[in-house]
Length: 388
Image 1 (tube, rainbow, N blue to C red):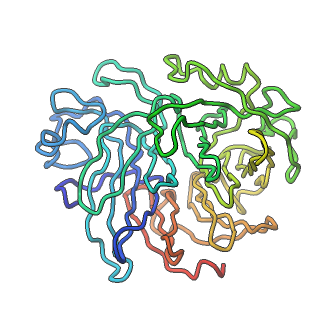
Image 2 (cartoon, rainbow, N blue to C red):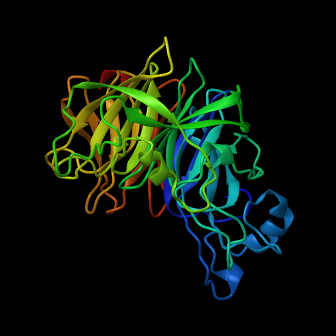
């Protein structure tokens, strides 16, 4: 990359933000965990031999670091891409010293929230607690952001986030088999670091319901259910028990909440292993404009792995279709679902058995960007995306 570092592996969630002229800025997560035994340390890290000098110059911006060393290699890289010349203008590390940066979401003020999909306490070569969100600012000049954890958004296995554009609420998924669906209400607009209130979704008529449908077909596709939101306390959970305490208060649990996306003030999110056959569910949450509650609907549940198998990242295409990245063993695909629930295959990964991840449209909706997880590839796919 332009900062002398190698492109790291495990490319996951991603966003696309408009830059100057024909440039767009892609901010790309890397789902790399704690590497406690590296032998000769700086010769075995994902960033290559230049990392030793790089980290000395930029140590104040890394999150988990001590004596110019880190064993936490998650973070983000940014790509400045010229859509007219179809050339990469620059590429660089933009967040460092974090762990298992899986997905996240773009803010309404055009920054990226990168999420740690792990909860780890400090000890040994881990010097700080992990399990947080971090804000990454786009830049066309190579620079690493100072990593500041957004602790009041909760400490849990974060996956993705999406915003209610009218109210400023932030919705969050949790990648656990019995995870909650969260809502964060910030104290200040455009300032998540100022803190706020964290809540969990609960069904009005079912306290602590298990929505997986694994053992009982409790939730019907297409039916709408009233929800309420439960306030959570001790959100910087030392015991990694936020989901347990939330359910004890009546919070609904979802089977591996992962991809999430906002479209026309509707929040869509996936439960990767939900459904009777554990092949995945797509949920649809609609906020009530007149109070702080809303309606949730199971929009789709897969019954056949040949149709859809374990959906992960999600985005809404310009024509309103849902696009999903699969994450299962074997050849993964990008799958589309039309508003009438018709399913089609958009793309196969012909390179390897790695997953697709990080679906993101360019601001003009002419390009669809997507990652191949490992080894890191980022693809730009031309439309016309309004004519799927």
